[in-house]
Image (cartoon, rainbow, N blue to C red; front, side, top):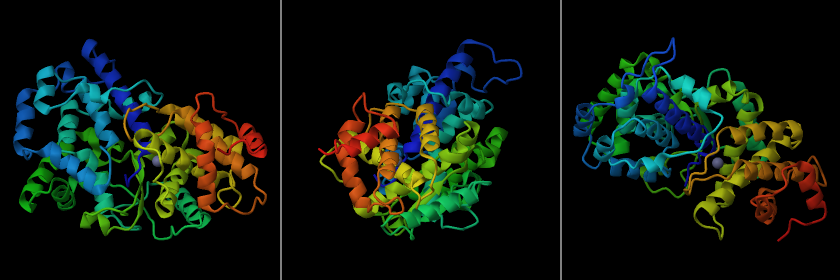
Length: 428
Ligand SMILES: [Zn+2]
């Protein structure tokens, strides 16, 4: 996996839940005063609309989208999953069959991000969302940034209002670690690519492996769908950019992907969500610290371990939490107060956990909190507070602590880890 989506997954998880909650409500009750009913209502889009879109997609559209994700080195977009979760609540069995969807693939537990996500989607037309999702339109801004974005270009600006915070933290992280990070490009995602025919057609061409003429036809369909629903703001709706991830071309064979520089891509939708949850100040920097840790892992070859499947992913995700916190509280990093940092991170880890039983699982909120506390304790117990540990040494120590961090009753405070480190009880 060359793109990591731990934070995106968090947001999406909540999206899935909130949407399914919304679906239940609207299927059984009238809309609340002041709210308009979703256009599709409780019956979902009609069969004719689905057929119309399916006719325009290549026969093997699902396989092609899967292939695109593999060529870019990514998992199924969690946003796609979330929207599908939302929509599967409203589709009939027959419609689900037509689309080859198993609704069980999109179930998720309750999280605290629901209200925010609900509020962002309450005016969006259901059918439009379904059709856009079938076209893979929710993935286009991410692919567009990977394929066409360069740092500082006008089409991939950093989220408005957060430019300085992101750039400062990004630069500090680049300097902090002992691996080469100065080639990583920091940029935003652009949802409005969806209404820019030339740009979206070029991404669609790559995504579905289509000829230019067919790609333009699909781009036109998507543009029309986005423009017909004012709530989608010509693509500026946060659902299209609720994502932040590290991209690395390492090990990728698709030439369009392999020739890209490593990137740190930050969508404005995720910043909006962090602001709405009052986590923006430290939380956004924490996301950046986590994602930069993934770039350190690429450079240090830390993705390989004796672990496999979900446990292997959980290890690298928890390591990124630990490294990110280590950077945030270290005097040579951001120098943040550890208690405050951990408090924000705890709130953040708790807003949107979902135990996807997949390779993409990033650890429970408790495990993430434990990993972060370990990172802060490792700073606190350093011989020389002005010197950061070599990243490989930090990784070795993390691997020693991992069996404890993943225990159900793992300590979650800096002091507990500090005393364990002091007693040298974190060595396997
Ligand atoms: Zn991650």
